[in-house]
Image (cartoon, rainbow, N blue to C red):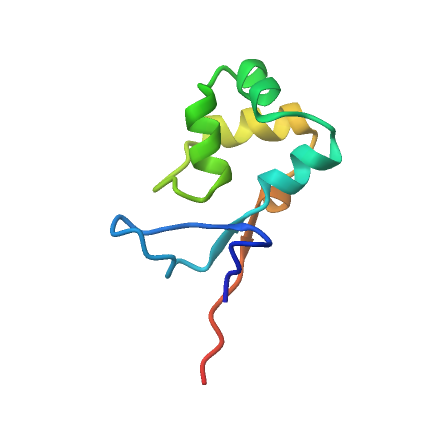
Length: 89
């Protein structure tokens, strides 16, 4: 299960976090000592849109945006996105 404390959870259009994808952009920004404002300026997005991605509220992300983030942070998509399936009981 996704913990909002650790990583942002992707959400559905109804706001529930039942999509098992977590966003680890916050960790990468921290590791590279970069702010969201710095990243937004460098990749040509608004701060609001970077925030939506970082918090997991984005419904989708364009490959071109993912490419720009990876290029700027010198990382792979898997460093940003993680699949964490729910454990069945």
